[in-house]
Length: 225
Ligand SMILES: CC(C)(COP(=O)(O)OP(=O)(O)OC[C@H]1O[C@@H](n2cnc3c(N)ncnc32)[C@H](O)[C@@H]1OP(=O)(O)O)[C@@H](O)C(=O)NCCC(=O)NCCS
Image (tube, rainbow, N blue to C red; front, top):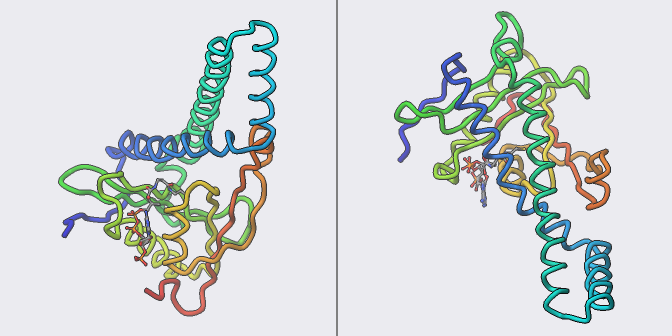
């Protein structure tokens, strides 16, 4: 049994919240790299490089080193793109969490799960920029060692109960194809996948990186569980 407490964000949580977000985001880089390697064009390029080096050098060892080097460069490139994504998140709502989520009278809020003085989970909710009239659940993250024990579900429940009290009728969220644990969480709290699209950037298009929009519409309460 985990004795954690879910409470509203305080300024002292700032660094811990940003670190938890960055760590949770970063852990999907490996999966995205594997996705890139699975693309037929990636495999064709690697084969082409292998053949080219073989024609130029006549050495299998040089081919393996060359292809290995290109694959390593690809891994570094994926990590770089992830770090850019993290910086983007940190420079948006997480730059000034109090102003983004905790204004008096606003229908936004940010919560943390605290366990023995440490922040082990987060969630926020605020009006959705992409869909006026809907609210967006954001920054759901749980420290790896405390996963699978219902923490994320409890955090989302807190956020959904909050907006239900403020007469919000529709909550949406955006996630990506690689965040498979999150999909199970969203299914389990009554969200339905409504839309999927390729993220509009060149690297995302190259690897067919899909983003999913989930939605939950209130009829009574949000949580049936
Ligand atoms: C997604 C995440 C927040 C889930 O946190 P969690 O505390 O482990 O989730 P919970 O324990 O509350 O589980 C909620 C539901 O999802 C299911 N679930 C969560 N992780 C699962 C997994 N790895 N395998 C199977 N089911 C899983 C649980 O079974 C549970 O459903 P149930 O109550 O019907 O059994 C966590 O994995 C995480 O922080 N990931 C990294 C950051 C991230 O990707 N965030 C999502 C941003 S869109």
